[in-house]
Image (cartoon, rainbow over all chains, first blue to last red; front, side, top):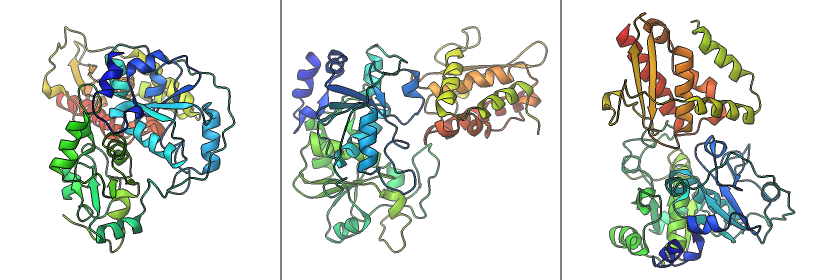
Length: 290
Length: 143
């Protein structure tokens, strides 16, 4: 298990939230573990996934079908039942794009207090590069009973008015979008369609640290704590003991940074502002910096 | 505009797929039929002028004129996770190879929406439409 000791040796505040591909390979038949694949590309899971893994789609499974909000307690309970998870199950997320969507799903699961959750370091990319098994066989799941608590947004989710107060107090903000989006020269990700903001720029005082800088691009694994500290603390002067809010365009990329700050660097109080730029850049009267 | 018959057939087939799972299966079956550009047409490193812009799957496209004046399309998709790009490449090859360039040049990128519908993710749509656009440009140049 060289990989395990590798994660343990990287100096993270909470190394237990990451598991290696070796660990996952060794737990494929462990009934107390449920693997969950979450991708941007909705075809990927069907084209081949880790044996036993279930699919959770960020749009259809985690979002309310009507309102711009996440699913309710009932929806989450039904989802957990469908994917065969009990409160005691260890859920392990992985996915494409450096675990971008896996971290997003992880974050939504934390809104419902399923703390028994981990992310497979390196995601699909590392698993595939190591030539490990993928299957198209969808696991047959026996539904469980799962009674989720009410969604608790207070701890890790930030809303617009709270962000505005945070700005007024000169609180720490991390804008994890591309430098062009941050500068306001473009309103969407490079090569992505414009998904609607009337104004370009960033929330006043936000530091720009593109989310993927936390990742080693060759295998999708997280950088070491020392490298992350260089990035967030030394370069961007963020203080781990200060309340911090991360945002992007709709809150998915920033859930990746939220994960890195909270668990890998041990920031005490980090929230993800999922309204993000599609709310802030469209709201009447909110302050913007360029 | 009337679409080439084989393309219309494929679009009609997708139009009957109401269940997202069926649509996904059909897309995967096309992805499975994908064959990379043969070495007699192109070998690595592929020429940058054949690279499809905006496609994160790193797709390449070639349109080779046949003795009868029609075009044969070839593709390469370098990203192993580029399942959608492979599916679209297989569909375009099946639907358009063997047609004269002026007919191929008539096909517009909006077919992507008809084929992928809810399987278009944020990032993919642009890249896939860009693949169709690249085929169109090559066909126009050959017409």
